[in-house]
Length: 287
Image (cartoon, one colour):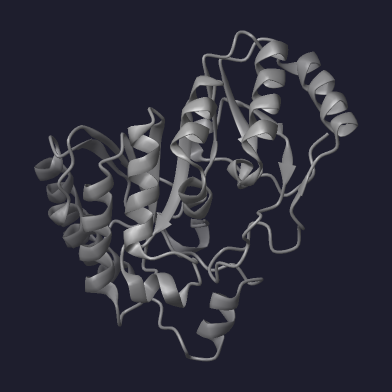
């Protein structure tokens, strides 16, 4: 009863996934192949009813729910509230409902909209910041500036959402590595989210960025250079009480901790891993 491919954040591994939309309403990022062959659409009421009845057979009392696919927040506020009420009424046991959030969608929503959506039962948002550097954001065709990323993130935090941000190591290539590291640290620090995930670039063949690499227009970074970039980024972060994770299958080294509280221990682990070159092998990594 799902339309594949289906994606969710790693932390939603045990959540019930309810697929209300298909694809991504933006779908222009050069590095992302998640929905390149899957047009965006809102499922019909009949499709959603059938989908929910199917899910109730297998997980009638979920603790957490993740609403798929990408960009549920691009819908009108009225539609979002209607669908949230439907989800809550069918799965009253759920203590958390979450979804992906595009920065443009957060910016477009008014304060009244976001208050209503939060009160309507949407608890947690995941936003792909990808980079805090404006040149990198331009090159990957993210559609927003670093200033707009900060605006979107702060808006979510201000309106009471539990907020998780993601950055992709290596997205600036060799040329923009340092700027990517330091500017990303600045943007994440400005937002000060409750969760921060650091993934590592791993190319998908159906993406424009893959073609750029094949043409020699983009230079991939070595594991050592990725870890140097990671060290610089974490060193420059200034966060209040943020759960940090860099233990995705795409990462060369598994890192985790509370930032800034455990920053020193995380930086030490990076140094140890680099000295022994104890990295996840390339054939195992994926984004």
